[in-house]
Amino acid sequence: MRDAVIVEAVRTPVGKRAGALSGIHPVDLSAHVLTALARRTGLDPATVDDVVWGCVTQIGEQASNIGRSAVLAAGWPEEVPGVTVDRACGSSQQAVHFAAGLVIAGQYDIVVAGGVESMSRVRIGAARDAVEHGRPFGPKVRRRYGVEEFSQGRGAELIAERYGFGRTELDELALASHEKAAAATAGGRFREQIAPVAVATGDGGERVVTADEGVRTGSTPEQLAALRTPFKEDGVISAANSSQISDGAAALLITTSELAARYGWRPLARVHTAVLAGGDPVTMALAPIPATARALKRAGLAIDDIGAYEINEAFAPVPAAWLRETGADPARLNPNGGAMALGHPLGASGARLMTTLVHHMRDHGIRYGLQAMCEAGGLANATVLERL
Image (tube, rainbow, N blue to C red):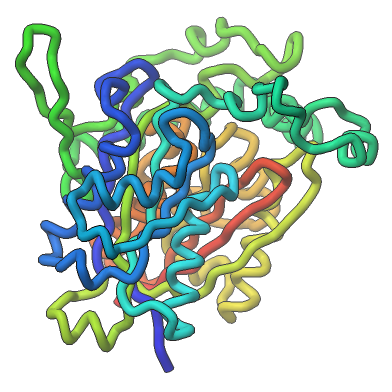
């Protein structure tokens, strides 16, 4: 039987809004990680069957099949195809699912999966807000749920209300995310997974960005409590306990164990199980809970068999609710910090989480890791990885 293994995983540092990466076109940011992936593995790009690329806001600079443009910008042969995937925040995790499934099916031998989002340059919601071209969702969907728009922020407020999460509790989760990310950065845990990016400076020179820009130290509960709650008056969701608007890209090289051995590659992990789940599109962000249950059942594993969990911190209530429902060990959750600290470059986040997860599994001898992401529309991807 064929399998699908991750040979290498690489990402850019995650840039903050209007930060160091904001001057780089998202096509070129994508090309940067493709080039780094090939350099690290000795990959001949001509052998790549496809580049499956996640991107959420496919408008403006991210339009016209950015996956294909990334291949051309990287200088790879014109014969290498590229395709762009949109499953909202899980787009690049879905790219991995598509890539792994087609490798196992024998349709691909060598494939790159990943994604990009430059939220500084292509504003979140820009495609949705182009009302002159018509509204999304359609009248039947709006009537079914009694809403004019679906808001992830309002959905997060509903989740917090349902589970009884107070603002102090959620802010503490945010502070913990920054503390873990700061410790990981200081300890060099991200060093091998990051492909540094050279950026132009105002004086005509350049500097090299080597670390994630959103991680903060020294914040206090009092500072966080003073922030406004934009989605609900006297609510609990603020900028502090939400994911950051970010820029970034990430890529993973996927093939079979047999081909990896032939090329002299030592795989990081096997894609053990890949599933999807759907749920209520109003609260929206609870779907990682049923997706996790489905993944564990299909994998024949229990939650305690998993040594590390990457659950995207779109908003603090998301991992908090996931922990409560799954009974997972909090110490294994987002051990190097999550999106509240590291940022959430939408179309790149699934690949960024997976890159961080496989490196963490390798560095700590963890056999099984699990990743799940909430996605607009009440969707979620869940992936179980097995270290080899």
